[in-house]
Amino acid sequence: MGGDFSADQKRYLEGFVSGAQLARLRGPGAPAQAVPAEPKGPDAPSLKAMARTEGEGKKLCPEEKAKREENGLDAWPRMEAAAREGVYPKGPDILRWKYHGLFYVAPAQDSFMCRLRMPNGILTHWQVRGLADIAEIHGGGYADVTTRANLQIREIPATDGVILLEKLVDLGLTAKGSGGDNIRNVTGTPTAGIDPQELLDTRPYAKAWHHHILNTRTMYGLPRKFNVAFDGAGQIGALEDTNDIGFQAVEVLDGFGVAPGVWFRLALGGITGHKDFARDTGVILCPEDATKVADAIVRVFIDSGDRTDRKKARLKYVLDAWGFGKFLAAVEERLGAPFTRVPSEAVKPRPEADRMAHLGVRPQKQAGLNWIGIGVPVGRITAGQMRGLADIAQQLGDGDVRLTVWQNLILSGIPDARVAEAKAAIVALGLTAEADVLQAGIVACTGAAGCRFGNADTKATAKAIGAHCGPRVALDTPVNIHVTGCHNSCAQHYIGDIGLIGARVPINDEGDTVDGYTILVGGGFGTDAAIAQELFENVKAEDAPALVERLLSCWTARREGGETFAAFTRRLGAETLKTLVAAVPERAE
Image (tube, rainbow, N blue to C red; front, side, top):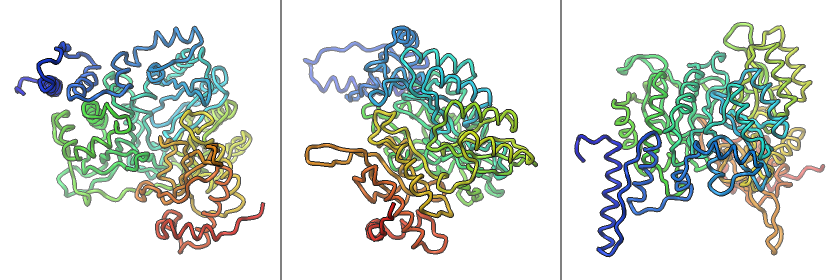
């Protein structure tokens, strides 16, 4: 290709030439095809990627064809018309509506779910109060805290989806791009700006990337969804290594050819549902460059991601096919400048996260102030509780309500003298501000009760595990129990000490099934990152709590010193562990 062509034009022409060569191979009898005009505007990169795919003789998946026919962002007038008629979307429109944050979740519920966007997971007290009103008027009267430090409102009638979205904007919020093939809610350290341990306040960087996404239409042309997280090395982790892009605050030492101080380390390719963590690239960058770098990475992904197979349409698979070197070189070409790289010994070890810091009272970096982590069982909170927490935040704290990836809430800025008053008010709402070890680690997705992909009622199972194990097993360190309904892994079962993934368990030869799970053990994250291994399959949901209890009892009785649950299970291996668990006597009810 000539030097006068841009990188985009080169890629487009390469696809066209491939298509022309394919046509010649088909022989002289093949019908002539019109040469399409080169796409222009912000949708051009994704449209060119589709054209290249077809030019190579491959077939676009149905979702790609639907996006080419009509970008979901352009569907708003038809969404308004559907709301007036009181009808839900059908066919490709189910995907298009997601671009505005509305998920039609039938047959689990004949209603919409709305997933919000809130950079770094932080809301003001008046936004929380407004969301409580929206959930009560237009939804089921509750909200779910998600594993992306976000909120979902459920049970929204067909007539109410559009007005709900408009009311979000009135609150200074949005749901745009929170679903479909887009960049999801931007997560960051939950205690950013108040954490005495943090290296960097992630709030401005998460917010800058959030607004860049909202105002850059090209960012909505992805082959599939994309996750980005900023971790400032505070006491509560952001699980950035489970994201497509993880920006990790690190301290670079002197003597390695770069200015010493706090940088972002770039990690790429996390997608634990596909059994992979984001890996260190050796690249560091000034925090102010994070949005520019993320933009370039996403644009390379738009060009190169698989548009034929939804299961392979994630960044991980581009990295697997290309290798990190080729991919980073393509990003550097986009940026027009080389990355800064340092050896691993140039980076000071990062402070470790505290797996209990998202629950209970912790002192802030601001003298005399505290945050209070509030346990929200399986992440579900009523409209009344939301209003009550907003009142506490306004009257006793700094006015912020912070969400975590552990499906709970944090109130910040509570003066020492008012901690007891705040805790009493939290208890009065039916919640807890105590640092409960079991509660700290239980995470559950929506499951079959509200998601069409769910194979089991995950939230009910997670609650049952907590209720059953709490009075029976004395834990002195957190054990993460992740209950997810399907292989989409919204509750990230592969990184749990104990992971449960929904399955239909056969109960007779006639094909009848009941809710159940495959149970895995030994997962981890951060410096203890590991993918959990399968231990039991076809466990009925009703039997899961007792089996989890026996796993925990086996560990507490046989661990060596202060051995963690994950280390214990990895040391023993699956077969030995099965034998030991089978020998644990069932406790009489």
